[in-house]
Amino acid sequence: MARRMNYSARYKYTPEQVYQAFANRDYWEARIEEMRKYSENHVEAFESTDSGIDVVLHHIIPRSELPDIAQTVMKKDMIITRKEKYSPFGEQVTATYEASIPAGPGSLSGTMELFGTDTGCTFRTTSEAKVYLPFIGGKLEQLMLVNLVDLFRAEAEITEAWLNEQ
Image 1 (tube, one colour):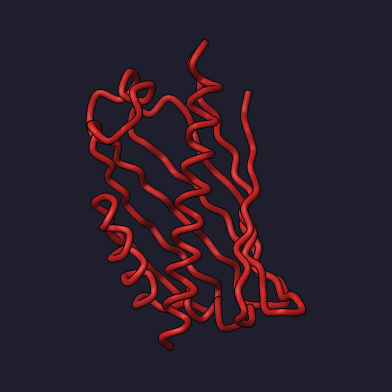
Image 2 (cartoon, rainbow, N blue to C red; image 1 turned 90 degrees about the vertical axis):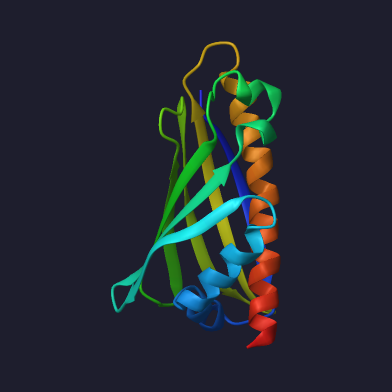
């Protein structure tokens, strides 16, 4: 059974300003640089065109830093490939993401929306985690989603700081 979670980051900036950050490779490099404090990360691919934005990120988490329950499944360092695809800028921007782990026993994917509010904008992410292992699948799904909240919160703080510097 899959588990779902929503996370919303609220910004004092307009949707256009946030989208312009997403459309800038320097933003992604700064975000990855900040995330390197926690694990090895890099931008694998980036493209911003009139058709939207495509980003591929690699996150490498040493096996020794995984929770015990995850170490029972993962016998090597966890390499996560995260692909994000954003629609062109408009009244409401939509996006999708998927995260894959080679030989991983499940999947992680979601949708994202960027929309204006009275005080700026909101970037809402809806995630779904599925783990195909009996007995521990639900625990791993919940663990994945809890860690995602921490990741999304950190990324929102980085985004806010990057926009403040522009």
